[in-house]
Amino acid sequence: MRTYAVEIDHEACWGCKTSEVACKQENRAVDGVKLISVSEEGPGMIDGKLDFVFRVNLCRHCDDPPCADACSEEAIAKRSDGMVVMDYDLCTGCQSCITACPYDAIEFDNDKGIAQKCNLCHHRIESGLIPACADNVCPAHCIYFSINDAPPS
Image 1 (tube, one colour):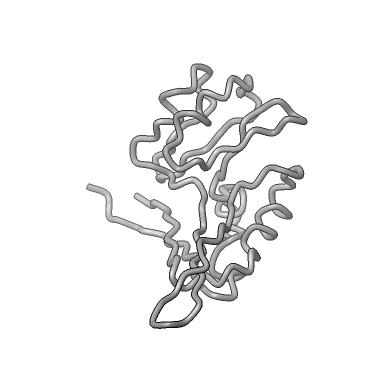
Image 2 (tube, helix red, strand yellow):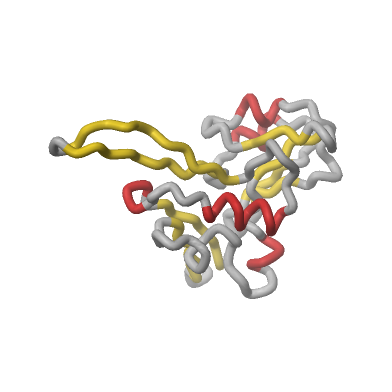
């Protein structure tokens, strides 16, 4: 069975936010909605030098997604390939998934009145591409997309 994953090397991130831009362009998210975000922690001092740490945040595509359990409309589902996707046509905008997400990775689109989250660019993957934010666009190479082709059991 084929499964997908995204791994992030936070220490390699230098905060350029290219992943945010690529995601916004790919998914046409409105102003104020980020399906991936890069935040800055710091400044701090490491070995007497000024240092900043950047954190990349997006849906973790949990094994047992609490956002899916919280959605009364079943608009969020975990696929057999590991992707946790949202059907925007089913979302009523109740925002229970936003509250349930332990990673603060679901945004509310006020214009559309619905919640939105990273769908791991499943439309790109299904066309043989990788997610817009991953390997090919990140100049720091801190966002890795992987495919696991495990033999059927």
